[in-house]
Image (cartoon, rainbow, N blue to C red; front, side, top):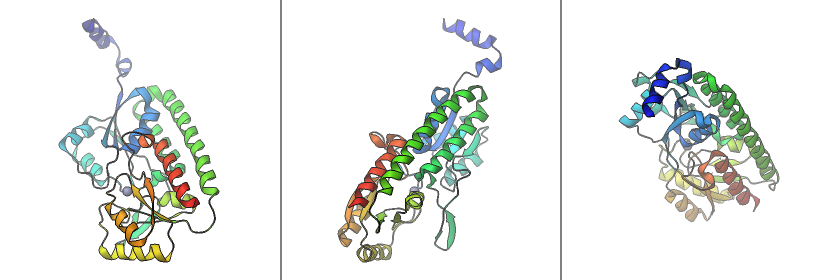
Length: 290
Ligand code: ZN
């Protein structure tokens, strides 16, 4: 039987054989989920930085190089989030099409250590998630035009769910009491969310978890929390919570819970991007309503 199938496959013209799933490689868990939602059964997906893991500090392995080489499509975030993947692509003679999911996003920029750098955490805005979905759709269409209609349908269904969640976010954040909306997280991952809903996020570590907060940073933040009556401090699913707990203790601030910042969780509500975002809306909404 197997032999018969093989012979049949050899006899078919090239286009019919292309029914084999497209090999897609994503850089981190959020893109993996979005790409899976749109690619459905037509893609075979491999992801590099998994759930609850930190892409800022990721170190590539020789096995990652093989995945880059084998891929038909590589989906990365862009905005300088994955310099390690760009290096890997440059050092490998891959035939893969490489796309940046954040292409077309209006980037926030920050001054850090005397340099202007883009904020890569664009996925923390649902409006940007729509742009991500459109770019992933375009990428899949380019490498697998035969399934464009299916990708379009999956994309449209996914964007409808993003739009539903946009309404939930607008309702939750729109009904908060006016005034103080300052909160602390360990690294600066929520600027796009803050921009959308008028919440001010303050972080001792800055834009990347690579940077360690100095004793002076921590002391300054403790002072700021006391002076500005900051509502709560939040832990992140990708970060060690010790620094945040220390800051909460020294400043007397409440711990508002755990936010999903740069990665999905392995299981539970945060294991999809939409679940991750919904959980953050609820956690933030509760802390800011008090
Ligand atoms: Zn980050």
